[in-house]
Amino acid sequence: MHKHFLSAADLTRNEAEALLERAAMLKAEWRMGGQGLHAQWPLRGKTLALVFEKPSLRTRVAFEAGMTQLGGHGSYLSANDIDMGGRESVPDVAQNLSRWVQAIAARVFKHTTVETLARHASVPVINALSDREHPCQALADMLTLRERFGRLQGLKLTYVGDGNNVCHSLLLLGATLGVSVTVACPPDYRPDPEVLAQAAAIGAETDASIVVTASPVEGVAGADAVYTDVWTSMGQEHETARRRPVFAPYQVNPALLAHASPDAVFMHCLPVHRDEEVTAEVVDGAQAVIFEQAENRLHVQKALILTLLGL
Ligand code: CP
Ligand code: NVA
Image (cartoon, rainbow, N blue to C red):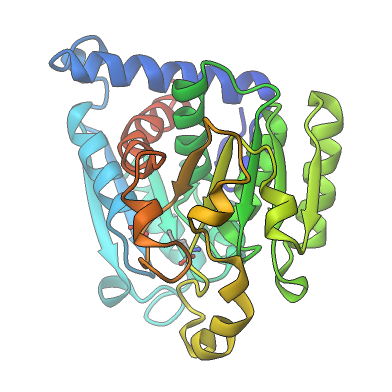
């Protein structure tokens, strides 16, 4: 396994499967009252720095609670605290933190910032969301699908909306694990061509197809999972008004969901804007697994930290 986790493509298929297996075990043990590794506190004395340039609910709390559950500690540093690149250079932040903590999780605007941190840190760096990827989210999403369907190979996940960070990590991790990923998006908001090519190359090895279409109805046809995310990601707020009419035809609503498989689940990384990218009816309906996805962030992130630390 790579020393760092910056991209969903940093994991081989075996590594990704082992991580999900470990996360499933940690989840089961936690639900049985904190058994197994939770009772041994393998992270005793260890600290994870959480360097966040943007807000967070799930990622932050899942990392902090995960460290606590395994006997360690999460130290949260907002942009106000350290002002990376302003008060102090990114390489200097990396080198300082490496003297005190055993791993760094960073949520950044520019993907290059997390790469720079990794280059200069002597401890593992985890991408906790950048403008390019959100690989921890994709891990939780794959665990959620595995739980629901009992397998990943051969499933079809359709992502409807903006070809953004969440979409990129789903393409890469889906392909790695044999999940075919279709992206239904406006022509001007397609995923990055480099990521698409990388996902297609990975998918060629795992029998996973990678498809992009402008038609939500065609994209969703027969899908086992229909996934969407906000139309305007953090950092793009000035584009909100321009994006709204472009994405309106891509709203996930009962009529669109009806084109998916009858057993399909509805997925969203959250936070969600009800009646914008998805109707309230779907978010709060029986097909939604959004809080399972959120819960699974905790367990995949614990598995990830343990693995990166060689524990
Ligand atoms: N899904 C997700 O990463 O949520 P937060 O932005 O609240 O961390
Ligand atoms: N695409 C969203 C995901 C938030 C978890 C964003 O980057 O804001």
